Length: 304
Image (cartoon, rainbow, N blue to C red):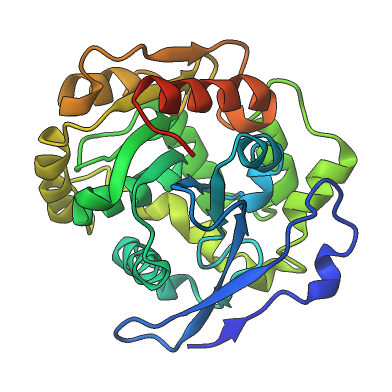
């Protein structure tokens, strides 16, 4: 396996991302040891808020979440998935599988020994994060689920099909513009450049290209059985679960109703819809989402 590492100089022009880098080695069967980057701010003794990004973003997506959550007294942890951000990037698309992504993140979670976690997850942050909850339910105290799903082989909607077709057929894969297109407000040139920063050239984009093809939307996809098993655990997960989907995301529309109906801890919760926000709702309405997270933590009995 050839492994690429984005030079630190690629991130030199970042603004509004003043966080010290942290790195954790992760090794799983069949792969060399890789370096996984994560943000870790706030008091280490506080119960962590875990922010999981998806495709094709990285922890920069949460730059406006970290300071106010830390100011409220919380520890905030935001990793970069393997293949993204400041984490190592295997160079071949075949190096990436759904189960490897879950295994890499399981290894990282166990290495940090995070417990009493409040999870906020979106996009692939949910496809992976909900698998972590199923694997380690006792580590999670509450979930805030946004614009994501946990598919088990059912056909995808037209929004996802369009994205899948583009991701697999387009000769150009402009990461920053893709993220901008998934917002309502549109990103500034500096923000677009920040999303491009982890990918100095196309050789670094294997993971970003491969991710859409890994979503299990047919019975023959890998990870269908594993996701069905995860749903069995999630259906009995009785700790508080809040959905926080946006109103202008054609890819995940209706997914909040599935979560509300199937996860035990979602019953009776004050689920919210973030208005005038796209797929990357973190970019459109960060302040509103931070307030939602903090209110949910307060309402479910936790203190920093």
